[in-house]
Amino acid sequence: MKLRSQHIQGWLLFAPAAILLVAFTHYPTVATFIKSLFTNSSIIRPSRFSGFESYQNLASDPVFWKVLVNNMWLALGTIPTSIALAIIMALIVNKAIVGRGFLRMAYFTPTMLPMIAVANIWLFFYAPEIGLLDKALAIFGVESHNWLGDTTTVLPAIIVMTIWKEAGFFMIFYLAGLQTISPELEEAAKLEGSSRWNYFWRIQFPLLLPTTLFVFINAFLNSFKLVDHLFVLTKGGPDNASNLILYYIYETAFSFLDVSYASALTVVLLIALAIAALGQFFFMDKRVHYR
Image 1 (cartoon, one colour):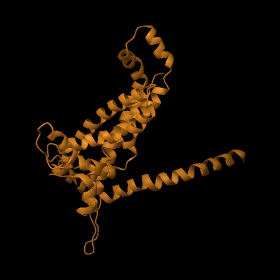
Image 2 (cartoon, one colour):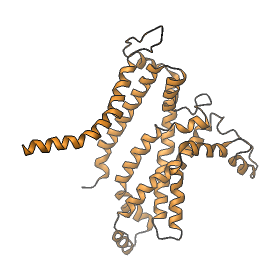
Image 3 (cartoon, rainbow, N blue to C red):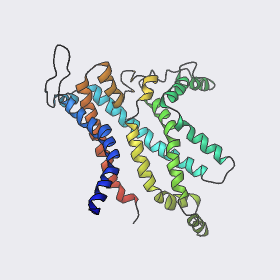
Image 4 (cartoon, helix red, strand yellow):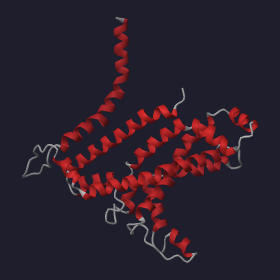
């Protein structure tokens, strides 16, 4: 009787979290998949079962492959650079230097800003002729350039903005990781005549690998979830040069009103992210944790 009471109590404690998880994660995923198997409904034409027709259309959709490549370039451009900058900033503010608190606040401030606000700030930077970037380059005789209106520069411009926004957030995790490393290790390294770079590369960085794995997974997922800034900066243009998969899903569902195809895009994105996350945890986890 007592054991049954403990089981009931455990399930009651688990129920609120389980209900929220099912209501806001599992149910929407299943509903989206089911929606992708049916055509769009209208007043004069009801929805009908179409099977995997929407998924077959993905293979012949040039815009889908374009935004997928854009997202890959965004991930390659933002993840390594954000992680490297986060480590450097964490190493700086982890030392006992004058103004350390101000530096920590300065590095972390971009993280606290909403993405819409960040996009408006950088819109002022990138504005042709009157923007801060063009004004600074004009000092060196560089002509004005439409950074967000050129297909060759719009994606790099977004990558720079994303790095500025995310590096400070990742710094917090590295700072926490550095503070868990015993200072005795640094003292021992100094006694052995180890250089500062050698100490970082052979002692600090290996001990930060679990943090790096966590940050890498978050950075990878974030690179496919960013969409807010596109509403302000480019709306996916010019010629889909800055369009990303999540914005394309929004555009398909609410601008083109093709909910079935948008659902198929969402399912493909969820599967890709799930495979990537599971692969990183199962194949990289053993390489970064010391036992």
